Image (cartoon, rainbow, N blue to C red; front, side, top):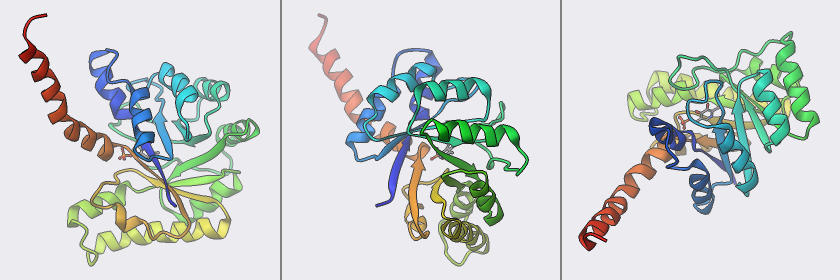
Length: 248
Ligand code: PXP
């Protein structure tokens, strides 16, 4: 079975819009697991724009499945990761002005910071994944650097899918899918785990499931968006019910 990691960052985005207590991503994680998620994914950004340290600490105690922490290579967050020991860390690039993670990690053979980060996490028993563009040489380099897994950035493929609405004869979609398939083959040959994520929706997810030895999909925006809409009727009904009871 392909493992579903639910990214709950945007539950925290709504909370941080008011700097309030709700909605609590810890409760969202619990409900996501009840819904069948095998894991919970959070990105602790350097600017703490959504997920907070407190969330990761509580999630470490409460998540029953796999806790996957996305983070940039950097001393401060690495320190927290080594203290909290999530089951898995996905190393991602991070730029302050970006709306979401744009592009994959730049992986270079002589990047000592990246190599040290991988070693420290692995020595602490944390499974390490690198979020990369779908590119076979980068998959092989990730393996050489000792990563346990690569998470292929599916953003370009998802954009192509949205442009042509999944028309399998569309040239750009064919190109983007081939990049993912070639990278999946490279991962299988290199003996590194294959994960994928970014821009996956209820509409496009089935077009990815044939990737060989795909172990994990991380999906956030689309699931949180659906959760907001599906819960709206019930939430309004509950408020209406309280108002209809009259003054207490
Ligand atoms: N995987 C990684 C490494 C990400 O950075 C993100 C976005 O935070 C996702 C998966 C989930 O992407 P989306 O929110 O588009 O489903």
